[in-house]
Image 1 (tube, rainbow, N blue to C red):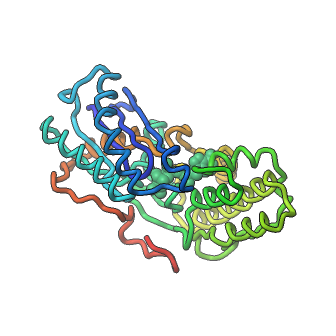
Image 2: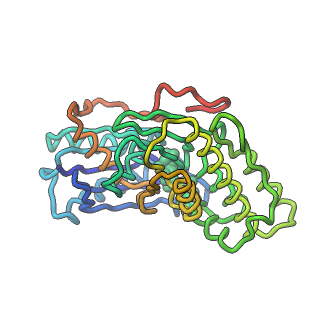
Image 3: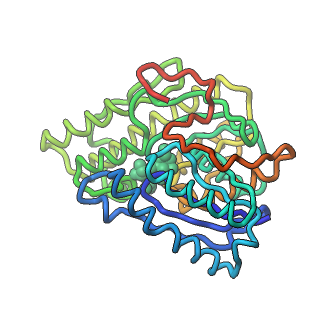
Length: 343
Ligand code: ATP
Ligand code: MG
Ligand code: FE
């Protein structure tokens, strides 16, 4: 089957055509970085308007790129949450219209499920269950991915997400937005041991994360005027990495052994984190899987693929055309919120 995927939950407008045999027939992404850059972060109103302007022509383009028409699509999958509600509604409404026009199933995808299943698009060998570190701009979780639709959350952040910590560090160092890639680049030139920074929750019994204190320490280090930006970036990245490895080890100790350690979400594009996680996996006799960097940050191929995964389920059912967009939508509704945190 062929699934058209649509992503519009944050500041990436994206559309893609993916087959159930893992072929990405075509895909396009329009980033809104320039529109939001003057504000140092994503402005929801600007994002929704940009999605509305860009999405319809982009869908026509991906169909044309693949030499297909709407009639060739077996389902329309769109991010239905969580995210900025205006943008999510633009994508979901478009998907509903296309599903209706093409008389094919609508599949409402949880954006986090898109990230969580993206490693399986990249790696046909990756079977369920697997341990997943989901690290993005809004989320920082450790999950046991049991099967499509069954996600057990083992840990989350009690304050900031990891991508958010990278973005805030970039803002402090005036590197622009989004900050993750810029911090990574700068960190390569710096000394990771130059700036003493805290490792919040390191060694604590529950495997949860915390990054707010690290960000504050970065701000103090910067304001002290004692350190070079390259050293702050390198020391920040090292501290964040130490926390991730410690928290992940803790979570893996507490769960039933699984064959694969998997990372997904925008921060999974970070080369240092990939290397460190690969080391952790190897030391535990686990296989390590990370999607290619372009599949880590927001894209529509992962949404189309999540649609393919759903479509292949023996009990597949289309979502109703009155499916309501969800600004918040936990992957594991049963998970207890971490203390001091939202979903
Ligand atoms: P969510 O998926 O939680 O809704 P989002 O969709 O905004 O949030 P993603 O696009 O998945 O987030 O990831 C974006 C985040 O990843 C940003 O915080 C960005 O700084 C971070 N990021 C991207 N590339 C890198 C990198 N090379 N190193 C570190 N962080 C990175
Ligand atoms: Mg983005
Ligand atoms: Fe995302």
